[in-house]
Image (cartoon, rainbow, N blue to C red; front, side, top):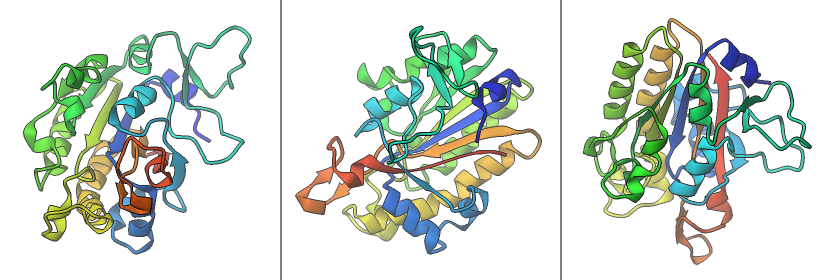
Length: 263
């Protein structure tokens, strides 16, 4: 069990990665079939957990994440939350949960000396529109470039390189480093040479992500300990029961991969 309250007290840095639109079944199949060997070597024993997202598309899911609500296990009993906004007086919070007295997690971490950094992927982090500024505005600093976005075939290498440069800049200071991986978000048919997106092309996108995301984790953790949290914000439907896309409460959208570990 991860004691997030102790992690914050010890000023351990945090890497939070969202694999945008990645379905649980895509991640599980890739793990079981050996398509993501480098991530498999880093994930906890058994690989990805199946969890359920608090939001069915990027904006509400990330608003929930940055408010302290990570994906939950699909069962009645839940483990203690990693972090939670200070609750009303009648509610008891487990001692291992980090309680922040602020309107969001990032502001709460700032009170403990953390710097929050956003490396955006999809356009909800781009500031190209007013809505595209909502999530970046939560952070101390944010970074987005067109080559971080899913139409770029090498969209994971570029933000990983940028994240490592920034992490080095703040070496010695606790950071909350958020990276939104866009490669698993449509369009990803180009990973198979197709003009359309499918479950198979999302799996191919994840196989591409494997090398770069594992490089990010191993480089960050080479010299100091980090809390690593990996999950999808939601899934994507590719014709199941006639549904396509996201923003719908279909199981393929609700079920997401999740992993958390101290490295």
